[in-house]
Image (cartoon, rainbow, N blue to C red; front, side, top):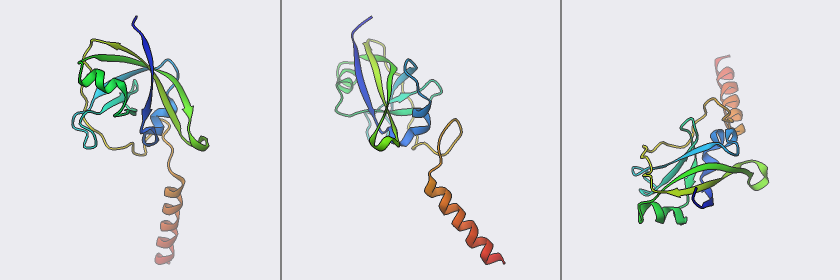
Length: 140
């Protein structure tokens, strides 16, 4: 085994359904996302279901190792941490550098409301309820 490094992810706010399911020790796939419109060098972290947990920051040393030195990496969830005011969770990975190429995956938009633990925004429910009340009032 090689040396292991702690790597925090960014963007987890948009993938809280997957982040809330993550547990320390879970395997994580790091993959290249060259069609990402925000960063053609994006490295995305995927859980065992293939759901996005977040991204490796542009400034992280791992970007240089992968893109400039042609290295690869394997990763597991080291810890799941509460962020500001405990509303959102973040992920810290334990990463081991290796010589295996990272897989490539296509870009996906942010997480949408779906099963497996994703929480629906309270404002969305309030807006839907108000719209329903207006529709009922209009009909009667």
